[in-house]
Image (tube, rainbow, N blue to C red; front, side, top):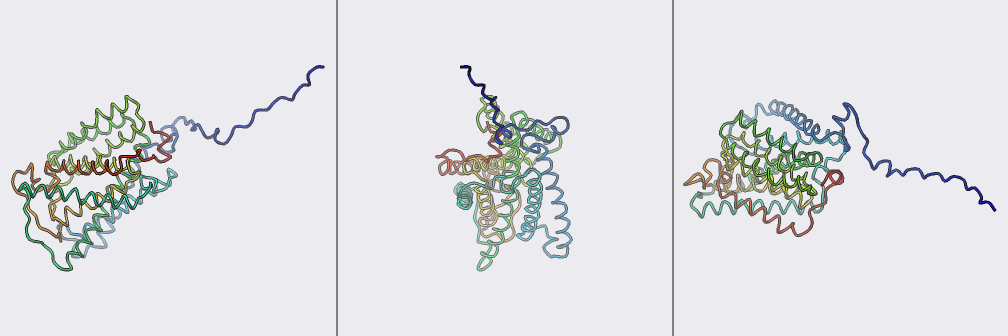
Length: 378
């Protein structure tokens, strides 16, 4: 018997997963702006900077109008009132810019390195490490005779009232600086950077300093820039998984040092330490899965430095600090008018923070990247 002819087999329609497994291919001008993850990272960063500056300008003008007759508004002192007003403006500015970018990029605002496990515990852990590291630095300066303690500047209820006000101010500072550099910029650059882009950005920052800046510790930025070249190139050549995270960390840390050159009281050690702590905060994101440890550490370090011990910070002494201190001896060791952050001994404090991170969080695997980052890691 002849075999019965079977009807032709139709191929199963492609599944939804198969249809969406390959990113759409954009051409022409659209390709310049849109990639596999939506708006390209470079344009996202440019928009974030522009929107943040616009919000800062508008909110600053509004605050000037509201507080123009307030007795604190005309003083040049580093007061908690001024710090809180400035902090609110800065946090609202990056929050506004972040919300707009999150809508454009179809993300949640917390996707920018604010998710992850045990966020509150990490925040408290960062606070503890920040206070302990700054205390160790102050203790070393006092032991070596480079920092002298005077009588307490506050008593009674002032201790708690100023302590609470400065806690609010420095928490806002932590949200502002970490929200800008370790949240949005670190997240966004990670999803779209490689070694050559990182080298170009860092090189451009150094060129700007070379052409426009004098003094204020610009060599600290150069030092951070140079230290990152070899390891980032090695990660690039080895095609190491997650190399783009560390290349982004190199960029954000160098930029963090760069923005601190605008502070009038900085020396090169203070600028380098700002860039170095920026890198340590990036390490904390890699180990804990979020920027909450960095926010807590940043806030408590500043609180201990400016309020509790009453030392200078970038040449500024806080109004309403608790203890009274003054630098003494060789500026290289005392930090001089820059404060403890301008002392070579700060390198030990930074190593203490890094060691605490590794001991507490480094025994397990690095934190899992968010889904948006997994697509580009490696």
